[in-house]
Length: 149
Ligand code: SF4
Image (cartoon, rainbow, N blue to C red; front, top):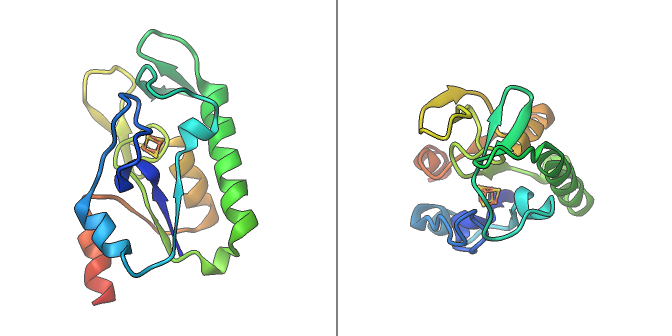
């Protein structure tokens, strides 16, 4: 089973009200079991919503409002909900949206809302790293496809 960011499947949960549909991700998951998640919506944030970024030990939105609680709660609830349904050993990996303040893994935006990336995980990505789950994104999914062929 793979955990997957719902926006990569075409679900309109992105901050803009749109999605991040990825044909490569959908093709990869075609014959597999998967569990779509959106930690930001799980944390009570609306669609659409003001874009957010991690800054030091907080998450803020572009208006400067602190949304740390929603992000932490959303990541916690999402992890709990997945682990209620699946044993950790049955989770083969996760395919999460690159650079998101929630779903990012390895790199995320730097908190200035101007585009640069820093080496850090999103709030949900961080939880998956702690669980030892392998995380891919829509850009490096080919790595995973290569392994499975
Ligand atoms: S929190 Fe994750 S799943 Fe939800 S819109 Fe952002 S990147 Fe997509």
